[in-house]
Image (cartoon, rainbow, N blue to C red; front, side, top):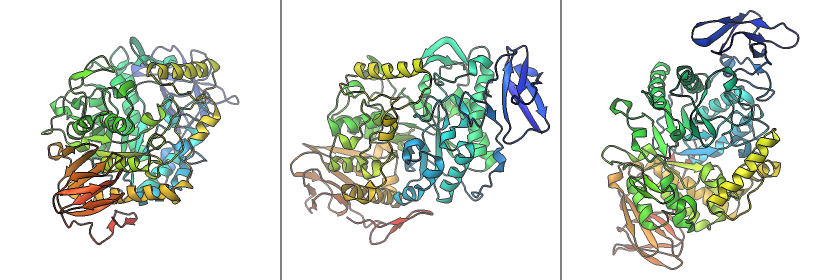
Amino acid sequence: MHAFSVWAPAARRVELDLGPDRPCLPMTAGAGGWWHVEVPDAGHGTDYGFRLDGGEPLPDPRSAWQPQGVHGPSRVFDAGRHRWSDGAWPGRDVLGAVFYELHVGTFTPAGTLDAAVGHLDHLSALGVDVVELMPVAAMPGRWGWGYDGVALYAVHEPYGGPAALQRFVDACHARGMAVCLDVVYNHLGPEGNYLPRFGPYFTDRRSTPWGEAVNLDAEGSASVRRFLCDNALRWFADFHVDCLRLDAVHALADESCPHLLAQLSEETASLARRLGRRLSLVVESDLNDPRVIEPTASGGLGMTAQWSDDFHHALHALLTGERQGYYVDFGSPQVLARTLTQVFRHAGDHSTFRGRQWGRPVDPARHRGHRFLGYAQSHDQVGNRAAGDRLGALVGPDRLAAAAALVLTSPFTPMLFMGEEWGATTPFQFFSDFGDPVVAGAVREGRRQEFRSHGWSAEVPDPQDPATRQAGVLDWSQPGHGVHARLLRWYTQLIALRRAEPDLREDDLSRVEVGLGDGWLSVRRGAFDLAVNLSDRPVAVPARPGRVVLGWGEVQPRPDGVARLAPGATALLSTSAGTWQDRPVARSRGAAARLDA
């Protein structure tokens, strides 16, 4: 017996379509615009669709399985069939954890969740705590970034479908790693979006860069909000996901009380209590507003943490010298120092790129550093470049090493982007596989116009060309050779040291001290001094007498309170004997890494 239900408040008649060999079954109207029917001989694997007022069969808005793509019939998926092996998994606190963002479709040549499992031991040995998946919701075609998903409850079939996601999460937990899933609630993609046929999921009262806004506060919004919150809770409950990353929450137009994010925060906390494990919500927000991470009880939105693009922009612009587009107000050592100690570059002052005052200040007395994710690269900051070029295409290994050290010794929750740890040379360009030629053409032209407006002169690869996707597939032969192996060792040592030393996990922003000089900068973190030479000549950096714990390039500590760094060198020095000294630093349920200077 399986119960089918669908919300279609404006329909006069709804039928369940079980395929061409079976008659359509009339559904019974219930309260709130819901329709229901029970089918004795239906269950896992049954294909179905809904007909509204005698129209064509449509996929279920809450379909968990779309084996024939987003335009095909839905299929019943019984989430209880998977035999979980993570019964002892306690969940984890993601604050201060090491995140690793990956795109399933380019992480391996096969581009599946099962293939990704084959590289989890690499992530465990690196020291990753949280594997963050870019969106896996079903989207048109074979591949895409995932931000054009249209079946939000389904797992993209080319990735392996819903059962494969369960296997992936189970495999991560077995290695002591949590899973964060990127979800998109601010819009749906332009092809295969059948939600408006069912009800008022969108409203023309407001618009977003992707079209009409999701209906969060107009007529019918209560059921739309329920659709989104149920989606989030389902990933936690049925797929054992530990954390969600919510895309571009500044585009969630909601004037109701509580705000959708506050509602989701409260419901997630309630579910965490019932499940007996930690659940987290991390957001991307362009608002530069710490209210996003403040508790709901004090009027905040209750999110666990948020991405910090300002820190990225400050670091990227300093290392590369780029100043176009949204980098215009970044690039000086002083701006990097500001973001390391105050998070936001724009905290109520004028943003040249936006042409207006922007943001609110962070209060170090109330806002801890781990509430913000810090990174040198991410899917956005690589993939939203015209050619999808990584940081390593713009700077040499010395500056890649400096970027790693500044991120992994920062007061933030650090995040890496797949392949960053070995300086991958594969680009990550925007790609898609829309079947509608009108949509495909609009996407091509939209990308060109976007980069023109940002001052980019590079040629924009065709998103629809299969070669664009193929170019982004990681080359797993690289980590074992040359400078790639050296960078991988550097990242592994930095992560192990961060895990071993409380001073490097400290997230009190008021205790971060940044020193600036001619061609160099330093960051003091308790007993540790990070010194970075960004110039092409030797420099003397003020540093307390102590041992070089980790060094990239030639470093000579001296007893007179300075350290001499060769051009491009980066060094982490300590005045303390430390727990790292003369022994391996082991990670929970993972590989050990010895820290060698």
